[in-house]
Image (cartoon, rainbow, N blue to C red):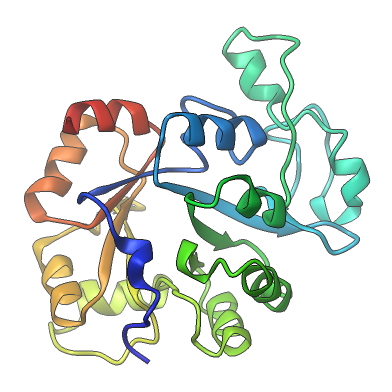
Length: 257
């Protein structure tokens, strides 16, 4: 499949600064508040995760439960969207940062895409069985040029590739990263347009010159995550990558200026 026509997603000054879950050191992750800040601050991209409610609404959220980030406990799959809308999506963040009493909401994918016509989204699929709906939402809003769909799970990515018929930009999984990093450097037939590699994974350094070379040979964009210190950003700049996914987008933007 190689490169698609809609590669304007990758346009911009390199490296692209991609706020991780909206920049989760600055704002409550994957929330309306995070989207508002990304738009106000003029960021071009927004990395987020997708899950599905009990009644089939696709929305921005990372975990299988609401326990870690909100004032509610329980599995996402047990809640209807009308119930999810009532949850304070930033409760734990606001408690931790002494902003008690502040509130924000969860956001459906369709609403996130409609909030700003310029904002580009890196969508990480966090569960199987929702690829068809995600494809339908992207197509119905003519948002193909504004999305890159990713998953660390080969099963989820393959499901998405089947549903999208390879017509929407995608990023490699754990499988593609391992091949690129550890097997001989050569041209490979990946059905993706980007690799998103961890800076380190379980103590193993994944970022490398070889990974950069691999992406050049295979005409792939390389985004490194999650990079949060200026020291690690400098490493990414030295080896050369196309984007960094970070919890500190404003710090990085100011440093690069």
